Structure formats: C-alpha cells, structure tokens
Image: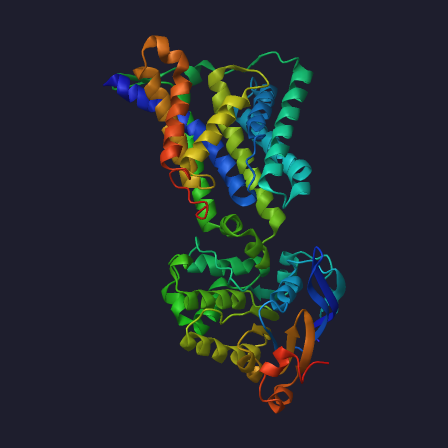
Length: 238
Length: 292
C-alpha cells in the first residue's frame, strides 16, 4: 500500500471534520473518494497533505508515518495535492508556476521535466510566458495538474478537479487520469461526479457525514445502480 | 535651473535611502504579513558595526556591516518571529515594536545613549561638479547602490528558483508549501535580503550623517513604512515608487516653503500622504491581492 489511513479523526475545535476514517490506496491504482458537499472529502485531502493536523489516527506513506511532517516535507516525499481552488499562483507566469514544482524535486534535467507537462497539455507550452491569472478555469486546472506532474509525484491527490469546468474540459481531464497511472503515478480522486469517478477508479470510498459509509470496486457499486442511495445512506450504509 | 537639478539629485538620493528600507519592509510583509518595526534597529546595529573597522578600510567595514546586520536580521526572525509563525498580523506587529524597543534600550544601556561619530574619508565627501551643478559624492553612491540593489533584487525574484518561490510564498503561502517550498528557507531568505538592503542603506546613510545615536533608525523606518503604504503594502514596485515620491515631496517642500514654514515641512509631507491615501486607500499599486 502506498497510502494507509487508519482511524483518522479530525476536529476543528469541537466541530468534527472526519471521524475514524480508514482508507487504503494500492500503488498504481486510481482510488475515488466521493460524497456530498461537507462530507469531509477536502478535510481528508488536506490532512493527508499536512495542512490539517489529525486529532487521532495515523497516515502512512509506504511505511513512513507522516505524523508531524510539514506539507513541504510530504511534497518532497512524493505526495502532491492539487487543492480544490487549484492553487495557481496567478501573479506568476505559467512557466514560473511549473518551475515551482522543482521545490519538491532535485537533480534532473529541467527541460525534460517541463516536457512531461507540455506533452500532456500542449496549451501550456503556447502560453508559458503568460500570467497564470489570465488563463481560463480549465486551463488553470491543466496547469495545476501539469505542475503536479513536473514534480513527478508518486501519489497525486486531486481535490474536485472538475469543479466549475465546462463538460468538454471535464472529459479531457477524465481521459488523462488513466494514462497518468500508466506512467507510474497513483491517484486519489475526490469528486462530486461520483458515478464517473467510480467508473474510472479501481476502488472507491463513499464519505457521508465525516465517516466512510461504503467502499468497494466499481463492479460492487454498479450492482446498486443508483449511487444516490449511498449518499442517502439507505442500502449501502453499514 | 541648477537649483532644480540639484533638488532632483537630492530627491533621488533621499528617495534611494527610503527605497532600500521600503523594499526590505515590503519584502518581509509580502511573505509574512509582518510590518517589521524593528527594521529601524537594523540601521542602528549597522551604525554600531560601522565603528569597528571604519577607520581601517571602508571595504572591510562594509562587508563587516553586512555580515552583522544579516546575522542580526536572521536572529530576530529566529528568536522573535518564528515562534509566532501563523499568528495574526497585529500580534506580529506588536512583537516587532517590542523588539525595536528592546534593541534600542540595550543600545542605550551599553553606550549611555551618547552620539558616536563615524570616520568618513574626505574623498567621499568632496563634491563632483557636473555642468556647474555640485553633486555630493555620497549622494551619487547612495543612488547608484540603491538602483543596483533594486536591479539585483528584481533579477533574483524573477530569475532564480528561490526568487520564484519567494513570490509564490507572498501570493499564497499555503500553496507554496504544498508544492514543497520550504517555509523556513523563504522566510529566512527574505530576512537575509532585508538585512543586506538595510546594511548597505545604513552604511551610506550614516556616512552622510557623520554621527548617530541609538534612535538613528526611527525616522528612516517611518519614511520606509510611509513609502510602502503610499505605494501599496506588499507591492515592491509600489514601495520603490512611494520612496521616491516621498523623497521628492520632502525636497520640493524644502525649497518651495517660505522660510518660516520649513520647520514644519514634514507636516506638509504627511498631509500630502493622507490626501493620497484618501484618494487611493490601497496605495498606488496596492490591491492587497496583487502583492510582490
């Protein structure tokens, strides 16, 4: 397992963000985490990335306990989060945004590293000297993922990448995930497009009210037809 | 005509000193949201460090001053500001006040507050005559050094990994860290660069003054902070513009005001600052979103 989360509880003061969430991600797979707004998906991602401190429970990257490690140390260990707001530095140019990925990575040829992003999203090459703030939402999301790729992460956490994007751009993004896995990246995909996310995943978790209410393979979820049931917590709750 | 040119050169030189302070203040504010009132004490430390080797060699003296001020700057970061990382801007500001006060009082304790004199070779003070205009050599040095430092800083910020990381941290510290940017490293770099700017600025400023007391940094810090506010807090371009505008306003008023009002020059300067802020509350380049 590249990522093992065990009984993770996160509280904001007295408000619960996550309650005893356990989750496993095998290397070279896509794991989808779906759930309604406020279910705790972003809390989970931010805690794994080191932005939030868990109240209880543990997170392991391979065999390493991440407890107490800063976000930057985690990034250098190969963990890369593309947050919900995409985290584009709008004042910087496209190429400068990509350059930032080197902070997590050392000793390699730079031009080659940029090619990884340019191959996947050719638009980035054309706009490389443009200020990132001038890009459209979809282009910014490609930049965010492209930047994560330059960092050559082992584990890529994508928090609602399709949020607010045009359907055609969403299609483009979804078509990229599988090829990323083939190039050796493991992906945790947080989505509101639950059915779609589960369909391209190898394994999926459903979060509701800060706990895991269902988990299984796409085939398992397919039996239930309407995924809405999982959100409502009727048949899938346990 | 010569008066105007002379005044412009004076304004450039005063503005340059302010610009170095304003840049140091703006750089640290951009990354940490800290308005560092202790920055004036970097000038004070520079002044005392000048006493050590000034009579031996100016070059060695300058290097020593840079070394001492950078060390002092990093020490303030490590001891006073790092433990408060993530605290709100007001807490940070009050801490910087306390630090400023403490450093000044320690200096007074050690020197009984007496004025000290720095030795400056006559060749530095001898004016240069260009087309009938008399220009102080130090004024030229101050202006040239400030502009070179600004160009260097600009190059660092746009062409080096560290610079790009510093700009990223100024725009979104959380995201910069998620990308692997080491928080300590960018903050320490900002303090180190702030230290270099203060050291060189102070070295030339104090050479011009000839003598100083422990409160030497106060007026210069005030000018630096006013300049960053005029320009728009956090914007480096704004800090530099604000500094030169302030210098220009001071020099023009010095000339334009009737003799009996010259003593109140700064009152007029600050009235102008207030007017400017009424018209543009975020400063010239300020939007608070657009930082460095």
